[in-house]
Amino acid sequence: MAHKNPTSIPISDPEAQEITPTPTPSTAAPAKGYSAKVVVNKVKNNLVFHSKWGELNGAMGDLGTYIPIVLALTLARDLNLGTTLIFTGVYNIITGAIYGVPMPVQPMKSIAAQALSDTTFGVPEIMAAGILTGGVLFVLGVTGLMQLVYMLIPLCVVRGIQLAQGLSFALTAVKYVRKVQDLPKSKSLGERHWLGLDGLVLAIVCLCFIVIVNGAGEKNRGCCEGVQSGGDDMQNEVARNKRRSRVRRVIFSLPSAFMVFVLGVVLAFVRRHEVVHEIKFGPSSIEVVKFSKHAWKKGFVKGAIPQLPLSILNSVVAVCKLSSDLFPGKDFSATSLSVTVGLMNLVGSWFGAMPSCHGAGGLAGQYKFGGRSGGCVALLGVAKLALGLVLGSSLAHILRQFPVGILGVLLLFAGIELAMCCRDMNTKEDSFVMLICTAVSLVGSSAALGFLCGMIIYVLLRLRNWSRDKPLSAIWMQKNPEQV
Image (cartoon, rainbow, N blue to C red):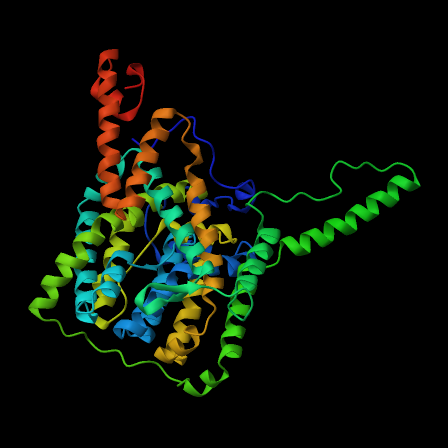
C-alpha cells in the first residue's frame, strides 16, 4: 500500500498510548454476527469519555471553521441556520457512535466559497451541489473505488494536501485576528484596534492562555519527578515540589478552548445587549427545497465539480491517514468515510441543511484540544441539536456579535496541528513532492491542482528509478524488489 512508511515518525502525542483505550474482548476481535448486544456495546465503547474536561475542550476545536462559514451563509444567502444545526448535530452524534474518534462534520468549503462570491448562487444551487457531490461520493464508496484511490495515492502527496490545508487555516486565522472582518462578504475591512471587546489584546491574551495550558501537545511532567527522599531538607523539597506539581496539574487540565469560547459568548452579549430581545424560541421550520433545472445545472458546474476533488482528498483520503496517525489501531476505510459523507448530503441537503463533510483540519483541531473519543463530537452534536431546536435561526443574532479574533485563535491551533502531521517526511524526495504539492495548492487556491502537480512530480521521480532494475510495483510502492 502506497501509504506505508516504515521509517515514519509517530504523529500522536506522547499521551496517546495512555489515552487510547485498551481493546476489550468485544472490540479486539471481529464479531461473527451483528447482534443488537454487540452493536450496543460497540456504540457505548465509542462514546465513552476518556476525560470529561478533555472531551468538552476538544469539542471546541472545530468551531473556528464551522461558525464563520455557517454564519456568513446565513447572513448573506439566507441559509436556514436552525435546520443546519439540527442536521449537523445528528451527523455529529451518529459519526461519533460509528467511529469512536472525534470525527468532525464541517461545511463544504468550496461550495461555500462559490456561494459567497456569486450572488446568483443561492440556497437551491447550494443544496443541488451538496446532493450531487454526496451522490458521487456515495457511489465511489459502495463500489469500492474510493478505497482503490486511497491505496494508489502516495503518502507524500497526502501530506502535501494536509500541509496546504493546515497553512491555509493558519493564514486565515491570522487574518481574522489582525483584520476586522465582514464575514458575509468574506472581506477584510481594515486593521483591528488593539483595545476593545474584539481587539488585538483580547485575541493575544486568549492565544497565550491556550499555549500555557495546552503547550505544543507534549506531555507535561510533574515537578517532583526524579527527587528522592533523604533528610529533612530533602523531604521539604519533595513537599514543595508536590504542591507545585498539583498546581501544574490543575492549570494543565483546564479546558482552555471551552473557556475561551464561553468568554466569546459572554462578550457577544456585552457588545450588544439588545440581542436578547431579538432571540425567538422554537425551531425553524424545516421545508423541502424547491429545485429548478437551472439550479441543478449551476450547482453541478460551479459547486459540485470544484468540491469533489477537495472532498475526496481532504474529507476521505487525508482523514483516513490522519486518523491512523493520531489513533493507532483505529484505521478507518476510505469506503466507510465516503459512504457517510455521501449519506449526510443525500439526506440533509433536500431540507436546506448546509452540505457537510469530514475534514482533516477539524479532526486535528479537536485532537489538539483533548478530543479522544466519539463522545467528544457526540457532545458537540447534542449542543447543536439543542440550539437548533430551542433558538433556531435567531442564534445568528448572537453569533454575529461573537468576537472574530477569538474564532481566529481557535482556527490557528487547528491549522498548526494539521500542518505538524507532515513532519514524518524523512527523505528528500518525499519532502520535495510534498512541498511542490503544498505550494501549488496554496498559490492556486486549489487542492485538485496541487494534487495533480504532486502526482506528476511523484511519477517522474519514480520513473528515474527504472535504471536500478526495479519492477514497476516496487518503484511505486517504494519497496525493495525482494519485498514484492
